[in-house]
Amino acid sequence: MTAIDTNIIVRFLVKDDEEQALCVYKRFKQAEKKKEILFIPLLVLLETLWVLESAYNIKRNDILNSLEALSGMPIIEFEADYVLDQLIIEGRSTNLDLSDILIAYAAKNSGCKSVLTFDKKASKLPLFQLLK
Image 1 (cartoon, rainbow, N blue to C red):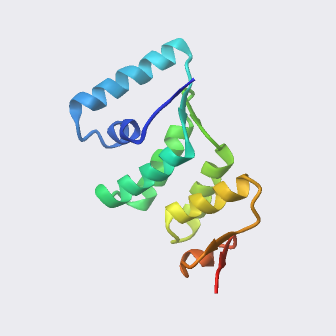
Image 2 (cartoon, one colour):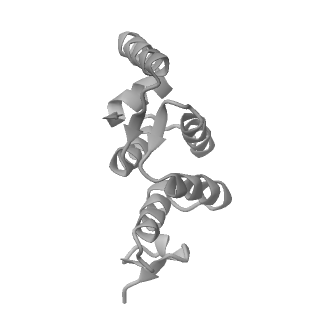
Image 3 (cartoon, rainbow, N blue to C red):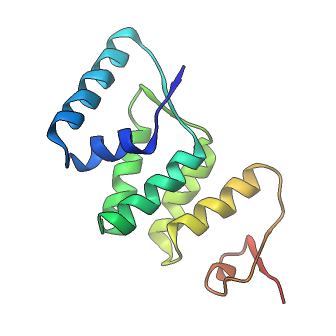
């Protein structure tokens, strides 16, 4: 299995560099042909959220739709499907930061009961506990 970095995902989704986007497309086609799996670690997913929101100002729903489409590709495997599924569900039903949702469900997936935070907005998610 081969992992992919944030810039690979961003080029594939945003296509802001035509040459690199074509390179990614060809590599994905090669993986498809060889029935190879390309792995997306949670850290890459977190960084991808940040880049798409901050650097590209992509709308939340478009980001969630793109992640859902990626997860449906047979060549793509996310580090934790449960975490991605919860990110998409919570992301569509709340206005909390996508990165906070990802952090909370990644912690839960690792056996944590809660995430301590000073972030009042994040503490609205049941998995966060405001430290006072």
